[in-house]
Image (cartoon, rainbow, N blue to C red; front, top):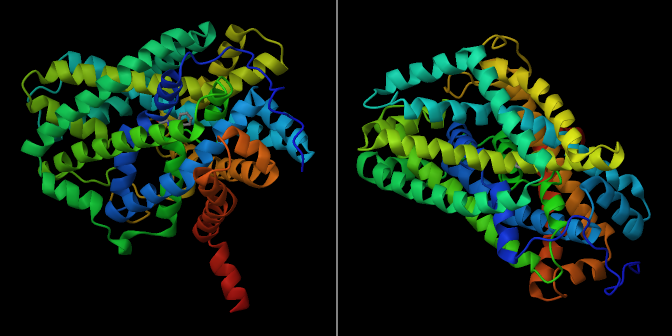
Length: 479
Ligand code: PHE
């Protein structure tokens, strides 16, 4: 199949280019590193039994996340438009069908839904900046800090307020389109966050039950692993790397032709994984030292870290800085979550960037109220998925609005989007086009192509079918 796009007649970006390779890596890292690494990874690892889950997550990151990331960047760079238009354009050029635009469409929707609850959790971090600065955790016991968290998320006024504040901040930046400011923010934020995590690591190595924490994270006990946990690990690999919904594709559109996609992807994956593991190594020793439950859920980080800060000299100061940095990390991720939707509205509904940001932002804010109220007014409004509410490993209730939106997006929409993206890059696009983007048909290209054509799609499908039970059903039918 010949490619219509020859090397010397490439499309050019509509919005300029990243100023350097380093800036691109930082921007993608800024999108990847967020609440997923520090808030979500530790609590889902805790809920899914630790070691075995972490191992599966690492496999998913390397064998599925890597090839999907390379595919998204190369598709984005070749299309050089918003994800919906890019998929339509390349679909036509490479495979004769504009229907591939629906992959971009699903990404737009996934971004909206994820940001709706992401903003609520980011709001919690904003609230914790204020609490830290006021010295609320200084010398406080685990019980007190737990009660403080419960009271905070249990008060709908406070949660809605901070959710609104975070959405406001996000809309403001997206509306002004200050990519320059973003570059600066990411340059300072990622290294600073890393430094603070290292300080915390020092604390948990000396004051926590470090050996127990390490054992929990790295000793795989496969008896604790269900197929649903495997799906959660796969879903989290997509979530934490910002894959499967077009955010990275949108960033790839501004990447210069010279930058190596393979090397950039490796750098981002290493940075993102390192930060998640570091967060786990800080949190689990503290969990065990203070008799907390690793499976206690979304409040885990908000209950363990303040406890550590409360006992450190200068804790109120460090705690304030930490939650500021975490809010920044959430903010740079939120921009990526909103970008596909905003770019789409600008191009298809002919709005200015500011109008689009306000429209999409209001929609996301309204949907987010459902998640904001999931820990208070609507905490008993439960449906569809099963959850474990007290961390005893038994699914004892249906999920809240927050639980359901999280499950639908992370565990279904992102892996499905990722599946369609690697299938597109591996099977629909001509070998020449992809080789051209990935710097020639060398060894790394061959590995990528094998993963993109076989291992990643088959792995995603297999986990889906196992978790949903289809495979067992088929086996039973023929067995
Ligand atoms: N990767 C981000 C995190 O870990 C979340 C995210 C998902 C951002 C998808 C953009 C797109 O917090």
